[in-house]
Length: 473
Image (cartoon, rainbow, N blue to C red; front, side, top):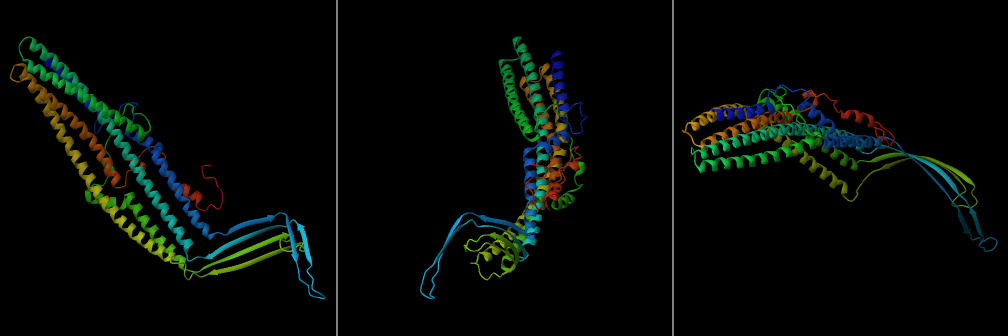
């Protein structure tokens, strides 16, 4: 009975470790890193997400660049230097002669030119609308990146919990197998079992140690991924909880919400809008172009005549340009833009179908994970009962050492399966939430300031001049 009690204590420790390491509805220990706090760190510090935000800010500048077409262009020009002028004339009265005049002077001039485009085939208006569509597309892409980072963060967090629990289970299993080997050797010494039983126990212990090495490798890999995504080393992680409460209640509703709210679909839609406007921009090259140019110049001494002391010129001129034929490039650009528009529309259909497939898949994975937890929980309970029974039967000679080792391995496998199922349950809930477009800090209730790209957009949209970006650089 003493050995049986030792086995029960070892199994009890392993079961306790399993329940503490990973639970769907946990009680969070004090001073533990929670899944929510880890996601806050990822949201604030993840370099790939910050890079995406910088890309959106760069895209914002497309709008003031397009709006510049409405604004005048002003330039100043000045010239100055030394010159030597010489001119020869032919005179025929009273006789033919060729007098020459020469001079060295220092001409200087300063002038200003203002050009205002009044009509360019609506290209400025269409370019502005296109730039705005590009900004919206970039924001949707940022939303996708945010969801990806949050999903990767949740997955990395749960992977560390899972692999930590599995590593602990495998170590506890080695402790049990060591005790099993010790008892088998004691029984072999008194003649109760054969050398075969000892060899089987030794083989099981070697296999258990090999599983510990594999579990350690998996755990280290998960820790490295966690460090990459979250930005810090994992410390005292609290159990994670699923986020089913934020997802739609049924599959048809989930599909409808996903097709409407998934940021990848929004990105494709805004790309269609930008492509439509690019067609109009290309067609604008066929329209007349009308502009007004005002210029003024003041000069001292002339570069043309050595006898001119100075002067002043000013003009306001209108220019109307009507394109007739420019080699055919403009027509090619229009055809190219139309083909690109057709491609973007197909991309939109593809994005919708991919979203539908992803929602259905993640919904199925979530339902399977829920059922799998129930099945593996029952499997663990049955394996525990079976192991205790086999040990008692082996103690009275009705079971062999191989039967005990097999039952022990079945229990370990069942507990690993339960840990994996609980991990999959949480990850699947986050995956579904991402596929329906709701994996955001606001929906999750994360305690962090939400990055708002429209703030930078409003800061730069109507900027007429300046090289400093809003953060002062």
